[in-house]
Image (tube, rainbow, N blue to C red; front, side, top):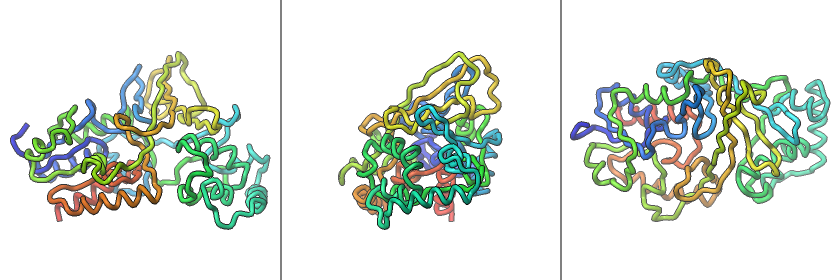
Length: 370
């Protein structure tokens, strides 16, 4: 370690690690401190039985941004990957997202015109003009069959509340494809890193001083003195000691199992959309990585939605009016800080895909170096 650095970066997830790479390449000295004993934040992967396991849930890199894609490919050995998801509803596998495979399975239709007619009649039957909650919003967009089969149970498990208690704003739109197209994403660039995401993060952090197992906020004064400027990627409200109140999150927990078979399910991710099934999805990790050579066993993660409390990992913001108002009040306090910059999903109380994390780091880097 040096005695003093140009920048202290708190957190080694994608946002923090991207910023560390950009600043280091610009000749700046950088120290990264990470609360966990491992780098990568929620994209960290562990090798189990030679299989890269997405420790904190499945991640697929997808983007419309060539800039973000080129950056990703520069530091990761990327293989083409198309995410094809199935929903398991009462033992029946149904293609996701909503496309002609879905409509054929649910309605027996074979043409876009037939599908539009069936869905249109269901929407008309509901007669909802001004949706007051998530359930009414979904019914007004796709009708009752799709809603009750593929949306209701999954969403209620994810948020821990009945769909009638959730705001309509959670579902602004529901993409419907009147074609046989089961690519989960519409992005121009899609891929997965061979060997998992940890090598990608390690490449970003090459030549950068990194300390793991450090609780920055518990040692704030000590670490602030080590650098001229601080880039903070932790929780927005926690930085200020929750003085205005706690922002809400949803969390997850995972039950990881090993099966002595080459292949357990038809694809990498299967969603379980019944409310009665306690987990929301099962991920088979070897199927994210076409370079995996293990053919004698497989690793599965059963994903359970969870309420958030201190000590758990915050995954999803609760994007309602109450939390948005509180987040904006905290952001006013951020704007008044000197030489401290907030970066990433936790620090901005906003859901980010991986490309968003990279692009937000690019944006802050340009601001710092203009």
